[in-house]
Length: 244
Ligand SMILES: NC(=O)c1ccc[n+]([C@@H]2O[C@H](COP(=O)([O-])OP(=O)(O)OC[C@H]3O[C@@H](n4cnc5c(N)ncnc54)[C@H](OP(=O)(O)O)[C@@H]3O)[C@@H](O)[C@H]2O)c1
Image 1 (cartoon, rainbow, N blue to C red):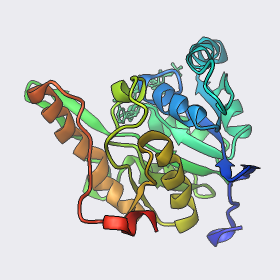
Image 2 (cartoon, rainbow, N blue to C red; image 1 turned 90 degrees about the horizontal axis):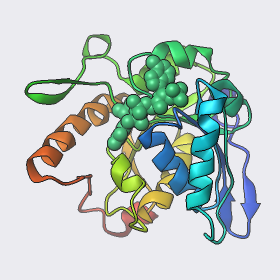
Image 3 (cartoon, helix red, strand yellow; image 1 turned 135 degrees about the horizontal axis):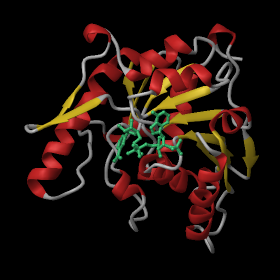
């Protein structure tokens, strides 16, 4: 048990690896599919969720096919969103901000560690920009926590490109910043970050800092357009501290 009576995610210990059972809500989209692929490649059990199970199943089959021959890969299956949550211990929210609150309210999230990579962004002729959530006093991650108070919500993977996640590089040359109010839940996301970058994620502070991480993706999108790249964030000055 961790603070607030919330349960820690069930873990399957395999040798020295910690394996999580992860539901990816919005797992048919590029971000959810890409993160699901990376997690499964590193031995985690992934359940891709969709509003329609029959939409999730072929995407799960596509990821499974991509993992053929990868030693130690975990399974990837597809289910309806709520069924995926019920079968998992860790839940990744990878849906658009529009409709996010309504969807979260339908999910059985009590007791789960929930990772949100949702970015409330808008686009106009000047490009991408962050949307104001709750008059500037909120974020998508905080909304999820408010709607599901018995879950433990952290924010992570906001600034990681879906194109690179599904690409051929073994690891992405960037850092994953993790925000949250419960250390144990942040550690889950920090561990999972290693599946993507080969390094544990960086504890970037409290959940309310999702207000900065989420709209920062608009800056990366602007950089991507200017330089025709898929940019990410790399934090300097940490030395060995980040792995301790
Ligand atoms: N794409 C990126 O590079 C990237 C990078 C960092 C963060 N993110 C964030 O990750 C999230 C997902 O990004 P994405 O590009 O994968 O998004 P997406 O393709 O637009 O949507 C992902 C999935 O969400 C479900 N969905 C769509 N509208 C919904 C609604 N109104 N209610 C419930 N479910 C809905 C759909 O799945 P079903 O139809 O199967 O239910 C869809 O396949 C976003 O919040 C985005 O800001 C994206």
